[in-house]
Length: 213
Image (cartoon, rainbow, N blue to C red; front, side, top):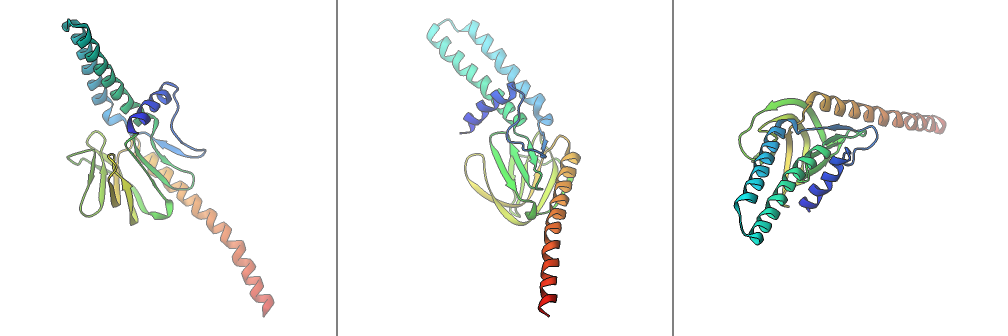
């Protein structure tokens, strides 16, 4: 499934399109911190493919090795394309869609968020780290730049399918201030809209009570 999404993302990348960003939503990229590393891997893979093409004299072995190397190059490109075309999304309703390429996708509702802030950290370890106290770090380039705290823990799906729960999410965004501002603005607009809907109903109820009296 992850590979299918990655290769689908290659098509989106070539077409310069992004995946599921609706009207009024803010897409927040997160690839700057890892781009140099990704293209470093890509360069090494391409050099290996060319060198082995000259060194292996047996046609069958040469074809197999070339296929494996080309497939590896496509996987690297697919990983990067998935990250580019699947940014985080601050939706118009104030919700947050937290993503990492084709490997991680979690939607957090606006009403579940207690706070969101720019918060630069440099944890050591894997891309996805869940602490015992319910903090999930989604690292890119060894860093996170945004912290979201929730009222209650929510369930998420790890890249290999296992489930976990976290109440605090720390992740990377290329422009964390813009993402935080977009989330706060959308949440404020949604709260104002709900308040505007409640006001007429409250007035009608008050008139009804007055008429009954």
